[in-house]
Image 1 (spheres, rainbow, N blue to C red):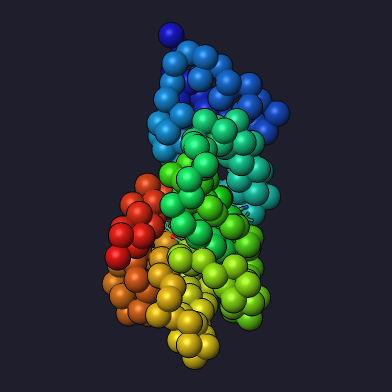
Image 2 (cartoon, rainbow, N blue to C red):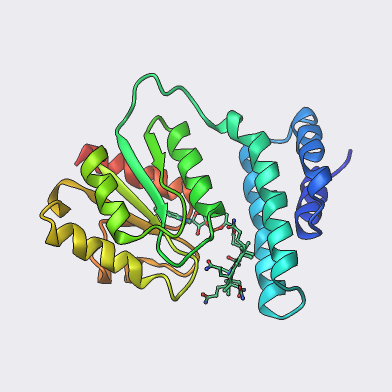
Length: 212
Ligand code: B1M
């Protein structure tokens, strides 16, 4: 039997954009679990890509093609993760903070939240504090989820939390943060309500917020 997990991982690493959708479809037909394909195939591949970029083995164009390839793979898996939203568990606003264009992790968290029954409004990347605050006032979500992949964009998370406080709306909103350089200590230091190491933890956190 073909080990589609390895084939898919290598396809993302190699930026085989034209092949990935077919490979994911074949893996599903062969009985591979969608969540495993995401975690052990697509995400595992991006870890390798990140390391190769860090060591200078590859450069931004290769990293970009790998990201596009991963997104195409996710497109096939997304409908399988999104569940019944007839009864919304609550509203979550998701965004990647100002100065940061990385959106794969944030998209994954949004997908999993939707799958868990949350109404999820994804505001995209490079989101300014001002625009986010406007949206919070308009939508009145229970949870704001912030993603950052760059150490240089992490301080924007603190700015969002401070501004929510300055506008007098911090008390009615839970803020969760995540992204590769973020950790629990940083989350506590900036006054976030919680930190998710991955999409599953983010969903768990959002569920807990709804019970508080
Ligand atoms: Co960039 N990049 N990148 N990049 N990139 C990193 C982050 C880097 C670590 C690579 C490296 O050096 N090894 C490095 C950052 C170093 C640092 O800050 N210390 C880096 C750099 C330097 C850059 C540029 C500056 C490169 C340049 O131009 N010279 C540039 C910056 C652009 C900008 O943002 N202003 C840049 C650009 C890019 C691309 C555009 C080419 C592309 C992004 C494409 C896209 O997202 N549409 C890209 C990519 C693909 C990466 C790596 C390789 C992969 C990121 C990824 O998608 N991972 C990355 C290296 C790495 O992280 N290993 C790297 C897969 C994804 C599923 O994981 O996003 O961590 P992740 O999300 C996880 C968890 O973190 C968590 O759940 C997700 C699922 O498990 N999570 C949350 C995420 N958000 C959450 C929110 C939550 C809870 C959990 O609650 C709200």
